[in-house]
Image 1 (tube, rainbow, N blue to C red):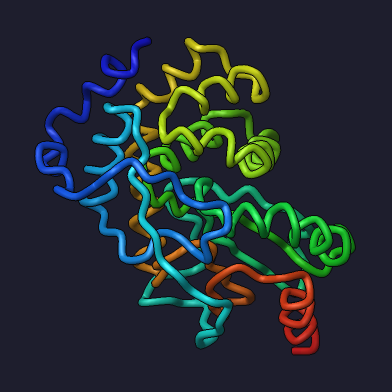
Image 2 (tube, rainbow, N blue to C red; image 1 turned 90 degrees about the horizontal axis):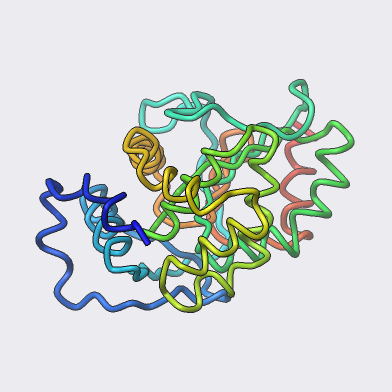
Length: 255
């Protein structure tokens, strides 16, 4: 195993030397309402370094119900349409009347529930029929989620959503142990990685920096937990059922 070698670049991280005193390896529950509340950039970098170097996951728990905020295409002075450090991977017609941007963490239980229980019907009814343009952006709230985002972004463009789907469907298996080894096993067996390419992904300092920048930008846009949705600029926080999403999309189709 080469995780320590691959992650030696974190040696100079100020937060690495001072991990949270009470932090324990606590893999996120699949059924937690939302995750990632009140995470700072320093904490993300520090926790990512500590978690990956030790092989443990440091989870951040929070709770949000599905709730609306004001509609805006510009949030906190930033253009919501600007994808940030990564290009958007878009599903649906570019001329669709409704655009949904989801901020998700691959270790978030309710993000997984949405992907498995809600999204397939939303895709069939609204994305595949040209009514909705859909984008998922990263909001990794712990070290293992950062690695998962790096894997998604290091793969071929047309594999982005395939890898995301696999990560969500197998989430309990690769997060349950609170260590990085199950994620490597999944990446090698199901996602087309080799052990060498997996370790090369972890060693990609620029890729890591861009994932952290994506987290920074999400925070600047007011994202504090996952999942968070912007529907034509209107912010909604928390897991949503098919009925809730259908009602929300229908309201925007009438605009």
